[in-house]
Image (cartoon, rainbow, N blue to C red):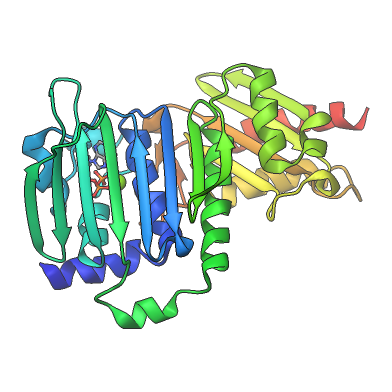
Length: 325
Ligand code: ADP
Ligand code: MG
């Protein structure tokens, strides 16, 4: 199983940013409204994620570290209506197979926290003497310590940090309800406060995409037949993000041919006008979309493809007309 975990780790865990992605998605799945990320040396020495989610019951700590153990999908029916990020039960097992992982957690029902430690295939559970509030802290130390070839593949601390920072921006744009912080080598670098109102969201948009982006962005928000497309469009010159095209489906950033086609068609009708920067979020009934296509989960499959395509096209067309006026 150890080898299988390490092989799976090759798919799931490429670098510190992919560890953070998996851990933060777990925090979000657990209903966290606050996630604090601390890293040392670009995450290669230490990654610590602390959340205020529901926690893991003592009896499930060891299981959480086991391969194919997921608490999120019980039936085939669940698998067809996935709203959570995780469902494969691979991430924690994979990460712990290539690091020294400490899991500390407390549920609301428990009066104390419990801790599990895993180094490769060794898993130990012990009472946590220091109190931990309801929620979970996961520490991943010495990533790839036992897979030197992969460790050598890591880039400079600065480059690894940039990957983490970019990923955090992407999730911060769509999970504006959650407070995120990021510290590097003990120094606070990012602080995204939970945003509820439109004004607060624009504040976050300004932090992530630049003040100029947020100040004059065109708002999109349209609902039809259980689908909703919302977000902002802006001239690409005013976008500070590396890649200014962000499209989320039910909270996941995706790259999808159908979506791209609808977006390009809407923007293409404007003739020479450059394709705008956008941060757009589509929500729809999870039964209407398959996310179980690839482990990296960037692709989706819509059941009513044509219908979704035309909805996106029409909403964008009317927003763009407004942008031109
Ligand atoms: P998956 O997310 O696919 O279920 P993971 O390996 O990422 O698999 O996590 C295994 C299990 O550990 C999850 O199903 C969940 O029950 C539990 N878990 C992991 N991280 C957290 C967290 N931060 N808060 C609560 N539960 C967690
Ligand atoms: Mg997961």
